[in-house]
Image (cartoon, rainbow, N blue to C red):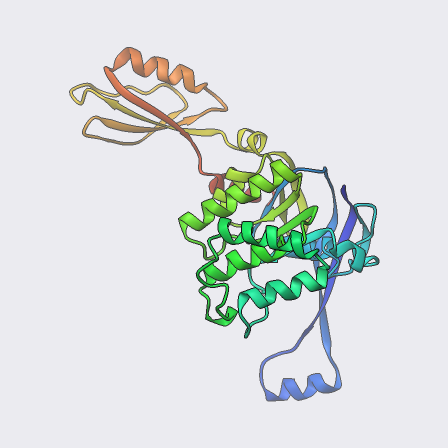
Length: 325
């Protein structure tokens, strides 16, 4: 459905030294530097997948989305989506995609939200009956009824983002590109957005490409993740496999009889121990967690045990460190 082959993107950026003299010199002779935003990126996305496309700021996520949506022409490489090249067949291509950029708006700034929706209906030539049905559903799901008559510039960031996502779905796209879609949303709105994404994916088979710094979105929505760093694809596979592969640490929290003494096994570290509660780090690459729990159960009167893996943000940071990024 989506195939990228050796996509590279190089930006030519003008540079100059500070000061008036340098500014005048730059008028006569400009100096440029070249930034390689993407370096031979290749991947395939199958129909009906929800992909988490993650990475640091400046890693190349938004550049990739712009190429796949047809906004940007790559320096080299091939991209095929639904049998089309996005930047060569833009009119046909945009009929089948929805795009949300968290930092940019597709809604008209000074007119009511509903007028922007009506304009998008005309642009995409959505049949009136279908439009009304879908619009009513989107207004209900995203709880937009209180401000559809409000100009976009008067909305809060969270309200605007809900409207942006609704607007991207008005023409029933087959593919949805979401670039930081939950930025500025409160906890309730985030859950509503996540549930709706799951719903359209399950019921209508909409393929979703999600770029975000919110690992809660990634864990809640995706099974397949791609990690990019400095324009290079570092990992492409299962989210669970990534956590298992790059995480060699589990954290055990144990509640025990405070009159007893905690005795650790090898390859474990006591992080804290106070009032009958001990927090222990386990190097799972060298010892199974089950062995540690068995040992603790033998030497202590245990009331409760919880096991947690390292936060996903730390795992990703460790991956970048491994690649010296």
